[in-house]
Image 1 (cartoon, rainbow, N blue to C red):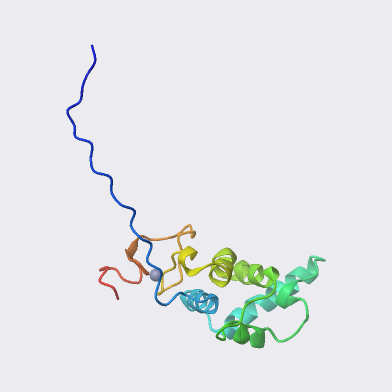
Image 2: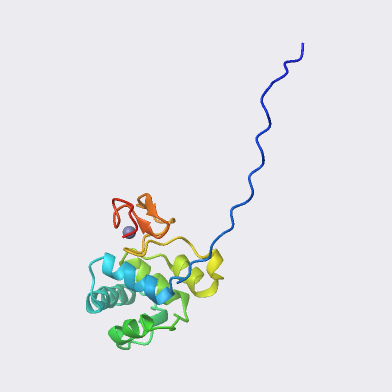
Length: 153
Ligand SMILES: [Zn+2]
């Protein structure tokens, strides 16, 4: 015997349009958010990167990216946080990611992808969907750590 269900087919919902962020996050803005969320000044981050460079030398590995030329890391970091500046080498981003919570892929997506394809990033702390310690979203652009009440901080 066939069981006939009397449920009405729900009307199909229309796709919600993806609303592009009116002010897309820049890669330099993401770098700054992550650095500040880690409680680091630029000079603190430079100290960590200098340590990484020394460790690579000791391990017999040639540093790459910003660590390669032996130059002033502080000035490179200041430049990387300047408006419109993009890291040219992936190794530079990987070096930063090795010494503080920072996602090189998020940076590259923000730099290269259409804003409609940008990853969701908290404007308070720079945490993104990809981070393992991602808290819940309070608003479209804020995590619950930065905006516990979800009232659009
Ligand atoms: Zn946050």
